[in-house]
Image (cartoon, rainbow, N blue to C red; front, side, top):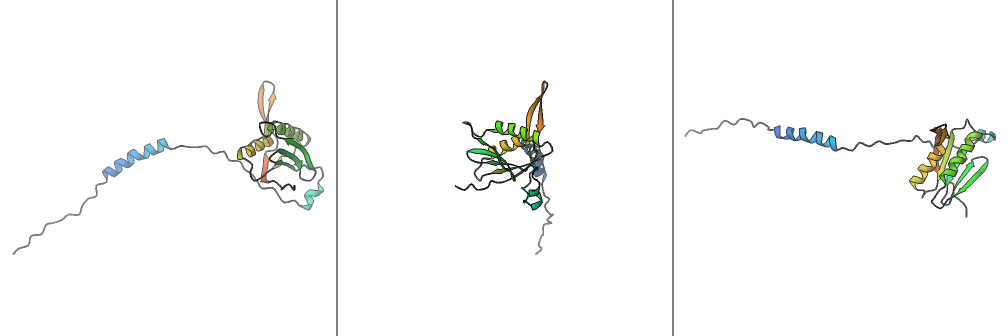
Length: 163
């Protein structure tokens, strides 16, 4: 008896439906993607104190310490300059900004400052203090201009207060 064999051809892949899906899906995903703009600040850690730095008595090493009840502005070597108590609505950033303007007038070449925060300091408070230290808005005639105060900001942990 004769056996009859069927000739089988290899199956062709049908990918046109998949390609159509990709053609529609890619523009849809690109059009619905949210493109965000991230603002990045370059920050450095505070440098270690050395014996050479302590010999320069006229050099300001500005530190702003964020405490739960006040902002303490001081010189690392000279001590506390001013303690700005909290107002009813929170930290008094306007007074801090005015003090930074006065310090910039006394030390015009100084561009470094250190902001030290306690562990539970809110991020928003830290940013507001950094903005007040970095610059302020001034008027020059009819225009309002941003004045640079201490743009090179280092951040760190506040020293522990002994009670």
